[in-house]
Length: 542
Image (cartoon, rainbow, N blue to C red):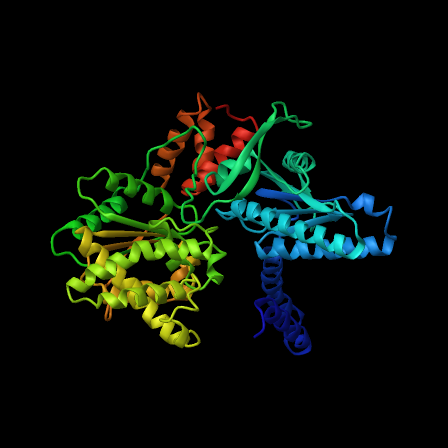
């Protein structure tokens, strides 16, 4: 199908061909409008030559490459470095970053260069850890092929404002003090280490295990820069991400009705004779889903009514992990860690679930002898490796049977748990738009088979979930879901939030309030990010 630009060009050509019949005056009059529309289309299609962005910058340096020159010829070294950087680039792209520059044995990438996302910093750090694993592989390969030790990588990451584009290398151009800070992070990282600045750390706090390092002097930066060595990612089931400006706590603004709707759903579930409730909180990134959930959790924890809490959060990486979100629902509740061995994970799962199925037998919900089968089938479905179980061995190649019986076991486990404890269950699912299809199917299954069980499922998601799965909240055969749409704050609410942010940062010009209101566009996340940038640039002091 031709584009608008192609259609306009064809129309112009057709008119030009009719000059002899229509005359210059008529053709020129018609062409003026077409040429104006074509110029506007082309101007709109052009990306700006330069753009100010908040990005997370990743620097990689191959350690020991210089010493290789004493033992290998230039062609061998070049081939080795090219292969290393190509593999590193693939890792960056897999984490949705963009490589901007190569220089010898160095790589510079940015996260958020094309489009800002809430998890830019997290993906940058996860990419850094993956690059360290690549460095470990490189060291082993060089040792095996050439008998040389000492090769590896070191990584540095910093988050800040930069100027992208323009100049001779417009595609790879990146300028700003943030680049110097990121380079300093890399230069001072130990071989095989990943150092991040405090500006990156505050965006990923609680997601990774870190060790704080002594402050670093950075050329062009007045105060020493705080930094951390990243050791590993925390188990996904137990991490607690924090957002906002460090040391600044604001009231939730403009979400009273939405919070009241969640509170009403909770009240219905804890009432006698309640069944399953399903609520979707829907908005684009940064509009306030996480803050609303935080306020709801704080409110529910202070209530006299008790509940059994389950929670899980999907990430871009879990989309490719079959039943990954389902696994996290059970792992969070019973403290099954990502780095637990399979033996440990299986033991924790059995200790938690076998008593539930034994209790269920007393009410005729299933023979106690079948409890082990239920647990093993669920464990097999979510990746705990029950291939050799006598309950699994005969059907392990029958994916449909594993799927059906695993789904049933998971739903029955929640039913038995609610009955045994005499309490409702609350399941909080964050970033559901990133969940794998298998887990989404199980949530729909739960809403059908446990509709008479007091369960509240609160799902935070972007609208893209419903583009991918229009039936994500089916009513037929299940529970009709309530949808709470979060919209950007209005002008008055934005000004209230701006005042909240700025009042805690000292006496600032009223113009900054106007700037936050206008530039934030009613998006609390971006308003907070703008305040952080103003702090970084020294425009306001904490």
